[in-house]
Length: 259
Image (cartoon, rainbow, N blue to C red; front, side, top):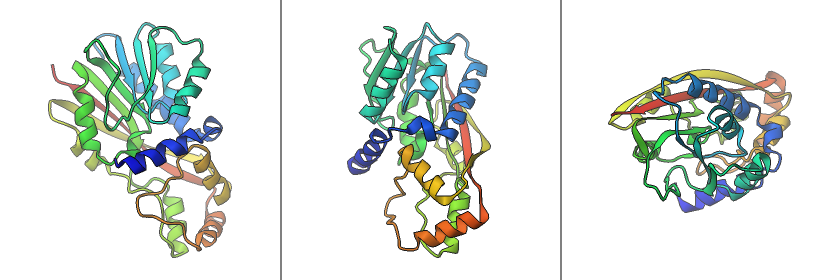
């Protein structure tokens, strides 16, 4: 990821003061990923966990409740998000460490040199420009037999807004999300991974409500090269006349490193 785009992403999430108020899908994904982690065939409860893109701590809280004895590294690209986690989870136990880290180029603050039993993240990967490279670097931080368990968004997400932009004959800023096949091809060697998909519906009584929600969660940064156009209102009118929700195609991935 370029330093300019990394700065833009961090700034938008730093400014997302009402994140949890609008994070309907994010809450669902965090709960679903936490459930998958609890049901995963880990040989032992993880002693050391790394979460990247922790946001306001939606998944972090689930991890702390499920594995209260684990050493937990909570990281995010946006410093203000970590400040919110610190306030929400206060008082933090000594086993929880918060620090800024770019999950696409992971550099944990880990003086022991030990690997992690579990590395996880909910709805962060869609911001990466080099998923395959990030997976390779993240898996390298796992202990033998450790797991990388993540969620992200698939092609077909927000198709209602894409259709509205097409009807208005304007470019659409929805990112080019990957297919399940592309995600599967991104897994690194040295283990085994799989993905499954689940459509999630976010109520959106109007286009204004939908777009405001994106801004509130810091997710309004469009794909590279996209510029807003004067036809936006036409797209909003089309949306209002045809839709009352938006669909997110969520993907859940689990990769186990070889022994």
